[in-house]
Each structure stands twice: as C-alpha cells, then as structure tokens.
Image 1 (cartoon, rainbow, N blue to C red):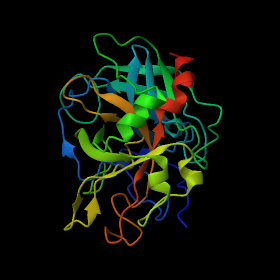
Image 2 (image 1 turned 90 degrees about the horizontal axis):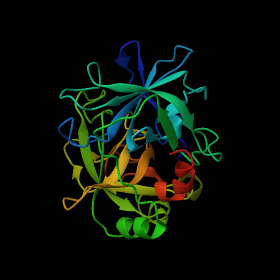
Image 3 (image 1 turned 135 degrees about the vertical axis):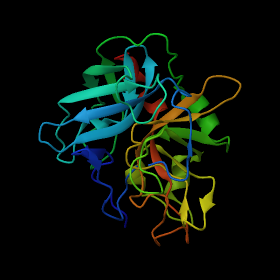
Image 4 (image 1 turned 180 degrees about the horizontal axis):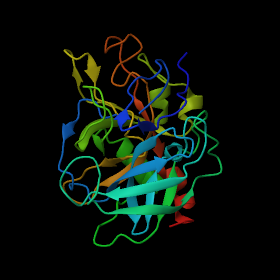
Length: 288
C-alpha cells in the first residue's frame, strides 16, 4: 500500500536544498520539462514561507486570481510539524533571470485562508489556500479559472495536454534555477484510482483529479511529472487562442517522482494529484 506523504513542501534550509525523501509516499517537481522565459506567464508567482522553528524556507508556486489575491496549496503554509508559517512572501516574475530574488517585486501575505476541511497534510482534503497580499499588483493580468463543474469536466475529458510550471527539483536532482514547464494529461478521479497500472486509493484522491505523463525517457527511466518545490503551482490549459484556463493546483504525488513502484517506468508510474478548483469556487470567492 502506498501511504500519503507527510509534506509536499520543499524546504530550502541553510541556503542549500535537501533532496532526499522517503520512498513509497506521495510527494510534488518538474521532471523532463523544458525551460521557459521567466515572464511567459506573468500571473505565476513564487511563494516562500518562513517558519519560527528554524526548519527553513518553504518553496512553492501560486498564481494571481485578483490584483491582491493569490491561490496556492494549503500545505505550503505549514511545515512538517504542522506549524503555520510566521511570514509568507510572494514574488512576481517581472524581470529576466532565475529563482526569484531582488530586484523582483514582492509582496507580503497579510492573511492566509484555508478551507475548513483542510486539517493537515496527513489527509489532503481541501489542499488550497488564498493569500491576501499587502498591496495590489497592477499591470498584470490574472489567471482565469475553470470554476464551473461543466466547463472543468469538459476540459479534463478532452484528452488534451495541460501545463504546469515551477522551480521544483528536476530529473538532475536539486531545484531548478530557471522556470520550467511540463505538459501532462489530465484524468478524472476514477481514472487515477482504478486501472491496471499504479493507481491511488480513493481516500487519498478524495474528489480531486490526476494528471499523468505524455512521454517517458527510457534512458533516464523516468516519465514527465511534478514534484518538490512545485506544490501550489497551477495546472492549466494553455490555449494559443486565448488566455490559459486553470484547472487545479499541484498538491501531491509519488515521492520517487517520475518513476513507479518498480523503481523506474517498468509497470507504469503514478500520476500526480491536483486540487480540483471547481470544488472551491465558493470558498475562494468569499475572500477575493
């Protein structure tokens, strides 16, 4: 049996990322992705959370849904001891370069809101959060979201790719110093809890949805995936005809990212699990 991971939050400790994690537990990084321009998706943000116990700085993604509000994953705001962050910074990607740093503009999160059903990373229910920024972000378009169940279902069932971006750990090990993207294939909840290949317990998915690889690399023995450091990032349909449409946020997955229970791609790999945002439209609207 595959057990829920204890925390998807990637921690930057003492200036250097730790990359070792327990196996056979769900976890989220961009595996087999490609580098993209820092400013390609201006509504994408980096969320850095500080903790008072010295456990390090948590690295996550997120996206603007309104000029003063960001959506990310709830577990990004807690450390492995379930202690809440004492300070959360949100970096905007308006200048070329790698990981966010000054002079990239940033905002403090004044307040954070999580659904009442979220009780910690042991259960994963309601893994979404809204951050209220210290001041408005102007001159940047926000990310449209598939709020209605009908439009969300139609997009997930269309069998087309969806994209996510982030600075998470890559197939080379360690976090990326450049923004990367990967295109994955969304699947409904029933498709990732049943089937001949590796699949998740319905109790773990719990109303959310999955996305699996569109390609694998036989030499690296890995498939496309998300992982540590990408939590909270949006999964979206990247339409060339209009604005991207967000389906969900990176939440959880298999700790040996891009591989399956056999230690590679033989026998299949686990899809990543994403919080379905259509379930939380009312919650988010309460604070935006």
